Length: 174
Image 1 (cartoon, rainbow, N blue to C red):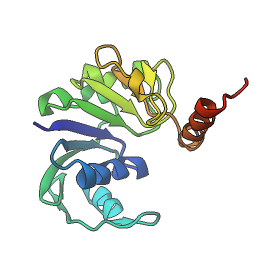
Image 2: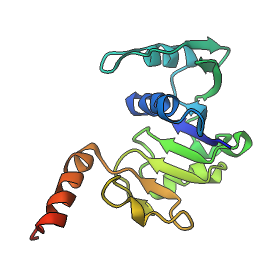
Image 3: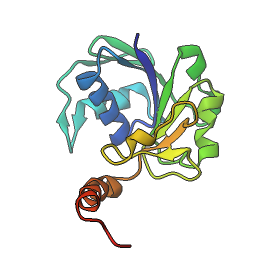
Image 4: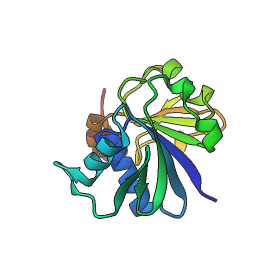
């Protein structure tokens, strides 16, 4: 059984999430929808040609309003209101919130109103259920009570793992 994921915001982070799912988790995670204000043609071009990460090695096509990535159809929406997205209808379990706009838990919660079960915010958030930094505190995640999760910031990911090692080995005085 695969976990169905929706991506809200197909900028650099959203595109890298799609690529990582395809490369590392193709049997267990399926991106079924993308919501972005750009149309499918523009999103296809940005996925194929990334000035930072280089060309996408797979196949990218547009069929109607949808993307076809390596043979898999991904619905594309351009909805400004996350509560109106068809996450429930599509069976989406997790939404990756990568617009940078819906960082407040009450706003990220609109994805849950639309039928998703969990939201992972790709940035620091306000009033989220938990902030997770892999390698530092992922054991604190409780699926029964943590539904809106912040993935912290790139600065946090740069510092926190090293600080954890130093703290565990020697202690850090506050």
